[in-house]
Length: 437
Image (tube, one colour):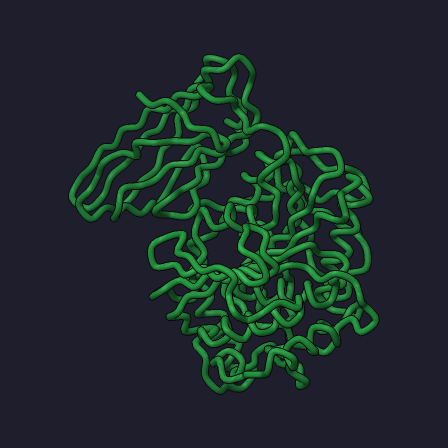
């Protein structure tokens, strides 16, 4: 997306790409290289991001990347994680914790990837806004079908989530294919149909500026019109938005709530309101529990780039996927971490040693750590790091992905700091807390 203003297609799209480049810190400090493509329906290697080709009808030439955890469950659930403008499937894999959550709970993650120049998903064309009409939704549906064929996926547990352009696509997917998705989670999006254009443009300034308003019934009719023959149950929706979003203005959040409460046939009056984190206001519509028909989280003072680590876990709870699956690996008490830093002026280097204190080999790992305030990673070795500050995940590279019992690997990073040059003091390995020292 871009700073909202009335613009021609060329200038608007150019600004859109520059503004969404602010999301790049989500990607990683180090580059990701995906393994070679694999043809459907052969199962792909586990615990690694793999490109799949020839997965089915794909009118807009999307790429498909898939992550299958080592402990994938029988008839797994499927999460489709949709990237932001200027992003990619590998960037979404690297910059979010969906693969880590898949390791814990055994579901499969699909990462669609745009090949058009803007790297934005088509949420505007008439083809994209109707079931089977062509463009990106058709290709994404083919990716889900590939996973179902290859892994016997549970078709009652298919979910969509996305950031910015991916959040808008989440709205579109749930409208186009209400029989496919059980729920969605949209981070900084707009209602289904809000971005519609008829001139081939990918950008709709009125919608981005938050000036497109409809009644709940009118918004709901747009969704129902995408698949007019459908009369079955509708997917639940979780919505996230920052009050200071200057790219897709905050009024879009209220319009999304109007749309999805109407689609799901529940009152616009919240059944419950709380504040699960500082500055957050969460409203639930239709019921008060974790799986309400509509859940909306408003983040006070936060801009467009609102996604941060930990939010996917909250989406997972909304999906209902955090109560089943394999136990996290390694088991409790199976890891020990030591960390030191060597600082100067406004910079430092950090060294982290991970020891497998369990009895089985760890094959593929993600180390969670929290940097002290003011530290930002600028370079790393032995792992890829994302995001660059705050709650960071260090993911193994190819040469140190396995750690035998009683063996260790050492990784490191360089960072800037604003005064606090201390090392992280708490760590998790594949979701399980490690001892330190």
